[in-house]
Length: 210
Ligand code: AP5
Image (cartoon, rainbow, N blue to C red; front, side):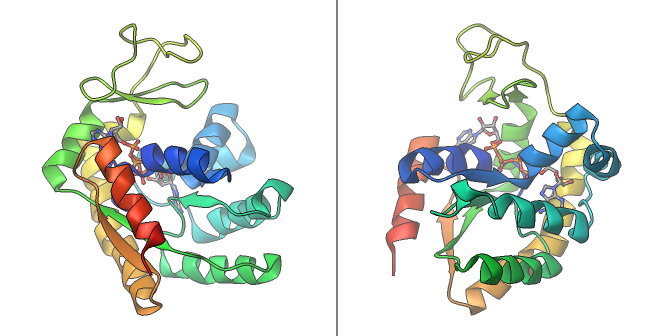
């Protein structure tokens, strides 16, 4: 977990490779649904475009379905869920049903100015969801995805006013989730302000720490 743009998706993709388990990102699943124009996507779109959260029951159902699939039986990296206290309760119920528990909750932190800089320069591939940054992770050919050659775009919710709203929502609704997992002894805070390699090492240490 962590504020928008702190590097959750970047690091979760690395953890997925390292651990050999699926990377389950509610943001990615919702964006795919929006792009495909499914009923879920139509419901989610206005919340996402304004920087608000999609209703808890919608996201809870989506996670329940995703974690019941066979590939999640050996473990998973959750990215961007849970983000509210009701979502924590809903995750508790799903985990009980599938017979597993959380090992760790890793919370990435970075100064707000760094977050705004990262989101301002982020470019994404609308086809394969690869993530770039114009300064820190540029594609080989400017504006073109290295993996699938599609034209890169800016996410609509990376517009500055929407970023400010997403940050406000994070502090108001998601920070209490961190407190809850701290009480349960699962939370490890990780400094997300260094380069991607340094942050990954810190995350690994956070996973291994008792
Ligand atoms: P979501 O997609 O989860 O957005 P977010 O939490 O705002 O996080 P981001 O994807 O913006 O950033 P990130 O932390 O993954 O950073 P990234 O690695 O890309 O959710 C989008 C929306 O969906 C929400 O607003 C909400 O509406 C809805 N939603 C999702 N989950 C929900 C839920 N559970 N409940 C309700 N609604 C939900 O990195 C950012 C940039 O920085 C990139 O360009 C990257 O290359 C660069 N970068 C990364 N790390 C570094 C580094 N160490 N140094 C330099 N640059 C870096």
